[in-house]
Length: 195
Image (tube, rainbow, N blue to C red; front, top):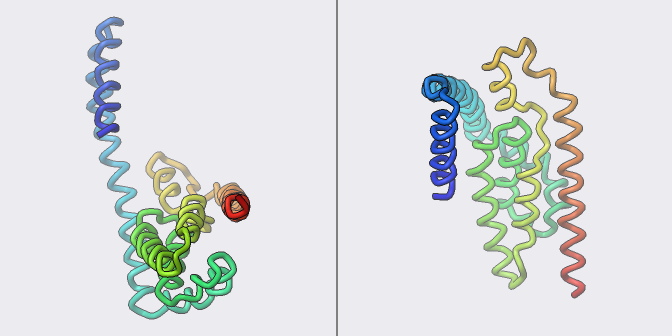
């Protein structure tokens, strides 16, 4: 609801300033060309997301996702403690992490929601606050990306000759953001528990 109001205000401002400056033709042209560019961008991103989402589904059906879950299990247990040992939670968390590693935030969302639901169930069962859910949200939001496929698709759409030349910067930035996020989440958990 808020975004529709923001959009309405922006459109109104564009029309008002276009009328005040005598550039209504430019405003109309920008609206038409902008919508065309938006559709082209969406189609290119959707194609990339479909490809990698299909790959994630193949991983699930072939059992590769379970192997990835086993490989990530030590990290998941380190981060989520006893809840990381729960089979359902660990599998959903690993799928979420794998999708994020491929830069597929949209494909990571369903697994992240399953993981959050399971972590919340486990925390409620134990009668403790769902700190593990908050940690999952931090990790999911910051997410280390090995292949930023969505960003690369946008760059390719806009004519980048080498859309993946951003990899080193993405790796450094995402590793730092995840490390800082985990550190802050763990620190705040200790601080609030001590009060």
